[in-house]
Image (cartoon, rainbow, N blue to C red; front, top):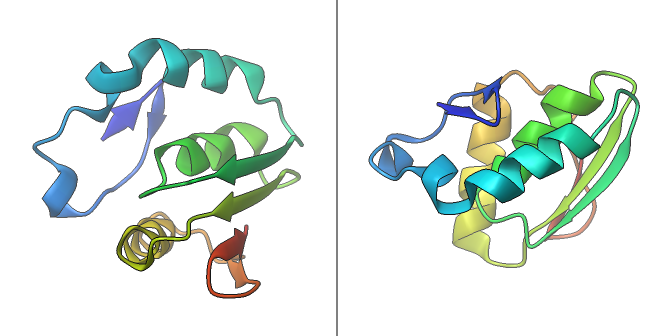
Length: 99
């Protein structure tokens, strides 16, 4: 899937949903705002579209913190991070991800 020029793999459950169409202007504005090395807090990360954009745009020198309190959405977020080769995932409590 591609959102705001950032390509990543998502779970098949979300393949029929056009995430970009739902929030296209917001995704593009967010992608434009995140610079190399940025520190980003994604509060209410859901399944991770903004987290994935932040990871792509901030690069290896960036620091991303994703918070998702819902266990189901958080499990998809973790899956998406693993599938997109984000090995530096750390958990801090049941709902916060430090990437």
